[in-house]
Length: 208
Image (cartoon, rainbow, N blue to C red):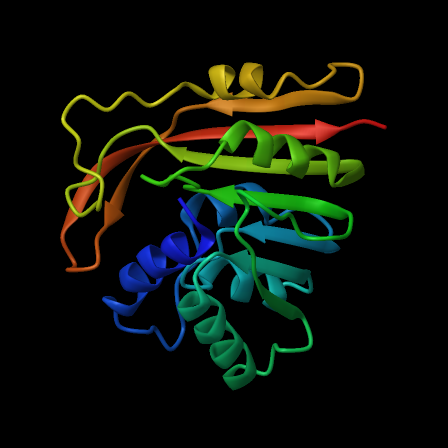
């Protein structure tokens, strides 16, 4: 599938949702990152921009990327409206074909799922290599299907965090699994309804 097709698909997804004036961050991000000293962070698949805004408010310098030009332009606008454009660089990338430049103290990949072509292992391996020594890669995947999810395949299987780590085939002397768990929580969907969902949380730390 061409980049144009991928962009059109995700532009349609984002354009179908109203733009949020102050989008919410992902719960797993706020729980797992709050104690870390601010530095440079890469937000892969920034979507509505809630994570990027939350991180910028804490003092992080954020490189936020998405394949959707709609998502990127919306984030640029909301960052400007909140006085955070000097801390957020919103960039359009098709991670199937390009990866952002730079090195980071933190790389976040929240729900980097797609029905289109994307070799997640290649992308996440590149993210691990983009870490500075002491930096962390935070991967949060779906462990269950929320009622409001766009993906409602009845036979879908969600790999455990340990499986995701194994697929990355990183040298244990350089990258260590710090966290691999599957917490359950009560989530609120776009329509205000709640449901119990499971997240698969993987944190990999670069030692050297």
